[in-house]
Amino acid sequence: MRVLPAEWYGERAVMMAFPHSGTDWADIGLDRALSPFIRIAQAIAYRTLVLIICDNRERVSTLFCSTFNMIFIEIDTNDTWTRDYGYISILESGAVKLLDFKFNGWGGKFEYSLDNMVNRRLHSMGYLGTTPLESVDFVLEGGSIDSDGAGTILTTTRCLCNINRNGGLSKVEVEEKFKELFGVDRVLWLDYGYLAGDDTDSHIDTLARFISEDTICYVECRDEEDEHYQELNRMRGQLESFRMRDGGSYRLIPLPMPSPKWHPESGKRLPATYANFLITKGSVIYPTYSVKEDREAGDIFKSLFPDREIIPVECSRLIIEGGSLHCSTMQIL
Image (tube, rainbow, N blue to C red; front, side):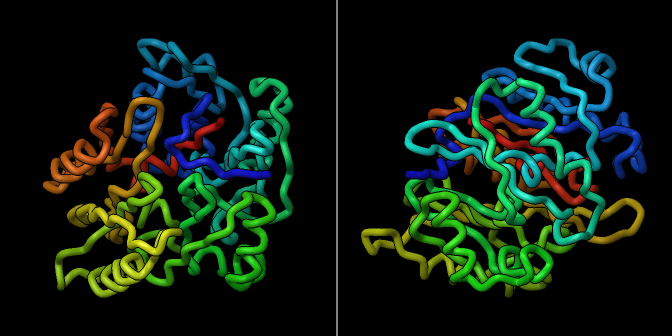
């Protein structure tokens, strides 16, 4: 029997990949780009081991005042978004197994050949002990699915049924694959919801997230003049229509939409969202963007997770390259 644990299950480590001169991050300056990665890694390492993939472990390790709970590993990468090319951890008959899915650069939008080999290279180095690795001939990014840990996955049709992933599978075909790979028996599909500037075709971890079996956080747009208003209202309507196993409605918690953030060169809107938070042992680490909604988002997380430390990390520089905090991390069981 297979189980896809929820993010709050608890992790052995968190996997990150740091920017280097061969990535697009060099365009904004590596010193500026590295800052949020350093802060995220420090916040995680307080309670959990961080595996930091980098181009030069000696150089990257000197960026930290303390390297407690950090391991620096030299592996070539194209980009930094380990959420989407890192392992997806499952339990099989109670034992951890790591799944290595195919990664194709979000439908061929970006170079991905090195990122697609990271999991195999890391596993071969022995850092994960004897935990078995299963290669899966299926394109799937970790940011495109969210699990309640009890047999239900939340996802979006724009991504999972996109022709640029697995040739445009139907919902039924995807559900059969998820049943086989993850042991789930329910998939909740969002047909609405997007963020301007998003390259992922509406990853669920930018829009709506389980925080318990009966509660979903989601992005709410309150400005009727905003381009997202109608689409996100339709998304909320779908969330309201979803039912739990007992037939009851989910408890829905709206997260504010950050005031618009713009790319410093192109002037295009960036996909900033508070839904891109990370749940780790004893803490919730969430992105901020130096906007007025940051405090409200923090207050919401404090009310939702009273037994966890709530840690903000400024992610305005991260979002320039299209991702945020959750996108830059992947938990390993």
